[in-house]
Amino acid sequence: MAQGLGGEAKEGLGRLCADADRIVSAPGGAGIERIEAHFHGNAFDLHRHDTYALGVTLSGVQRFHYRGALRHSLPGQVIALHPDELHDGGAGTEDGLRYRILYLEPSLLLDCLDGEPLPFVADAVVSDAALRDTLLSALGPLDEELDDLFVADFVAQLAQHLGRHAGQPAKPAGKTAWRAAALARDYLEENTERPVRSHELEAVTGLDRYALSRHFRATYSTSPHRFLLMRRLQRARRMIEAGEPLAEIAAGAGFSDQSHFNRHFKKAFGVTPGRWAALVRGAGA
Image 1 (cartoon, rainbow, N blue to C red):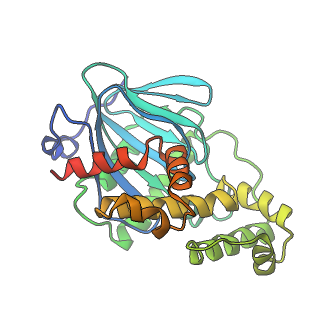
Image 2: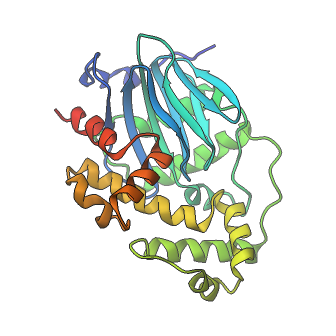
């Protein structure tokens, strides 16, 4: 049965018009993106991103396909999607859908797991008041930035909650493999605006490209190539939200041409750059 919503979660929703599809983005933070969304009908086509997607349904029914099954989330329930898992999303009834969700980079969880693998929650829809309240502590109000001390405590609590719902953990990666994956990740973060070659990561990590790819995926649930691509796409999304012209964003985010950018954006977020721009800019109208 769905959990009830606290008063704080109910507040602040009035700023979304009842008849308009839109997205409201929160101020950016290191490794955490937060949005509030209101949709009717199908909102996002099938897509995948390399972050956890952790949200709370506020009103309506959230309908989505995930790992071969159709799922439904009711008000007060938590949605927990693992990185790089294909999914879509939209409203399950004609009344529309409101939810808040955060996208969490796996590295933040790994930092407090002491070498344990990322928790995988098989049940994508969870009824858990403690987990819901922890998420809402970061998801509202959205106009405030999250300070470092809050984020540290929030991620620690989140790791415990997700661990309770996770199945049998995978075998932890060895220290050498974990260190190599972390070095590769840092190098990719520092070089998002240009092509990175396999031999560069080999030199940085001391591993051959195939071993590194295995260890990187085991650690972060995605490949080095996808990780670099997603950092560029996240940068593009921030540029869209800042109101920059779409024609200039592809090159500014490191893509070779507009069609290349459009194709990868939709695969990652389930909508085209133009649709995303209409949603976030409509929220500010």
